[in-house]
Amino acid sequence: MSTIIIEKYVDGIREEQLRLPAAPVRFLARFLPGSARRSLLGQGLDLDTLLKGPASSSEPQWMDIEEKKVKKRIRIFRCD
View 1 (tube, one colour):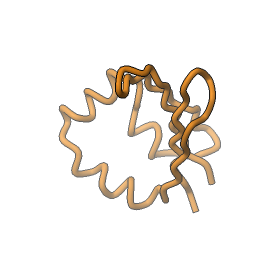
View 2 (cartoon, rainbow, N blue to C red; view 1 turned 45 degrees about the vertical axis):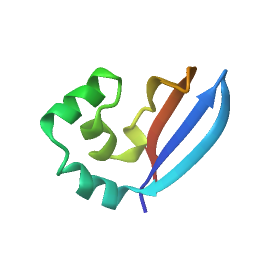
View 3 (cartoon, rainbow, N blue to C red; view 1 turned 135 degrees about the horizontal axis):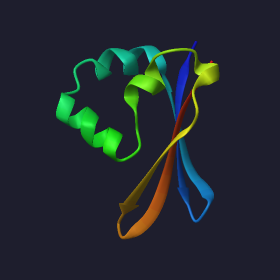
């Protein structure tokens, strides 16, 4: 079963990890408005690349965010 893995890093150290089955994420992504997809793409997350095609060819995607005035990096990728 394909899985979406989301990891949060602070100062290069992984703080949290979340694993989600890819099928429900793929289903829910169909309902995401185009403006939200474009916004995510602008921040470094390409949902189409993440959710379609073979997981083995999927490169990790990174997003830089700020949470409670702390800079963090989010790594998102898919694996089988």
